[in-house]
Image (tube, rainbow, N blue to C red; front, side):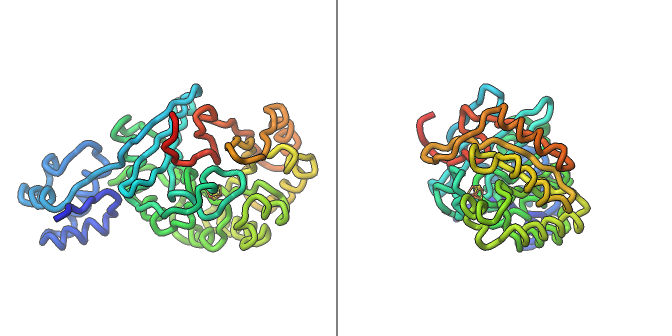
Length: 344
Ligand code: SF4
C-alpha cells in the first residue's frame, strides 16, 4: 500500500486523519506543527505523540518534499530553482535577496492558460494546477536548506495565475500563515494576478489579510487585450472596481504592476492615463522593464528610459517605485520562468 504524503495537509485535514487513525482530533494540530514548523523532523522525533501513534504514522504516511532538479545563481544573488514533479512536469521558484531580507516567488500552476504575450510561462500553455503540497513544497525546500530565516516575503508571482488555482492557493496561505505552520504573517504574502475579477472579490471577502498585486501593463482596454488576452473577459472598468473593493474590504493598498515595453506603453500620455486610471484607488505603482523572452519580439527600454517614465509618473500618482529586474542573467526575472530542463 502506498503511504499517504502529508505534505500540503491543513490542520483540519490532519485532524480528520487522526480520527481515521482512531486518535483524538487535537493531535492533528501537534502533527501539523511538527511537519511545517520544525523542518527536518521525522515521525519518530515527534516526542509529544505517543509511540503507538508515531508507529502508525510511519506505517501509513510519509512527508516527502519536492525534488530539486537544478538551481542557478545570478550575479546579483538571485537564485532560481527547478523542481521536478512526480508526473514528469517541472516548475520554478525564485529567491531574491534584498539586503538582509529575502523574497521567494513561488509558482501556482504548471504553465498557464492565459497566454500573456510577454510571458515565457504563457508560451508553454496550461498543463495543470499545482497541489497545495507542491506549493508548500517550494517553501519547505528553502526552510530545510536555510532554516527559519530562509525567506521573509512570499509572492505568488512565479509560473501560473494563482487566482485560477484559487482553492489550493488559499489552503497554501493558511499553512504559510498559521503560527503552527510556517508562521509567516499574511502581511508578508502577496498574490499577484493579471486581473481575474471574480476571484479578486473572493480574495477580498476571504478574510485573508494578504496583499494583492494587479498586472496592468496598459492603460486602455484595446492595448491591454493585445498583450493580456484575458482582458477581453475582464475590462479595465470592472478590474478597477474590483481593486477598489479589495482596498475597501481589506483596508489595504493594492499594488499595480506596470511593465514598460519600449514603444508600446511608455509615453508621457501613457503616464497621465495610468495616473488617471488609478487615481481613486489607494495604491502604489511598480514600474518594471520588460524582461526579454526568446521567441518574443517586445523590446526592453533602457534604464534611463525606465527612470524617465518613473519621473513623469511620480508627480501624477501617489506612490511610484521603479523596480530593478533581478536574476535577468539566469532568466529568473518576471515573465521569464518557463520550467524548462534545458541547458544550464
Ligand atoms: S503573465 Fe501570469 S497570467 Fe500571464 S501568461 Fe504569464 S503566468 Fe500566465
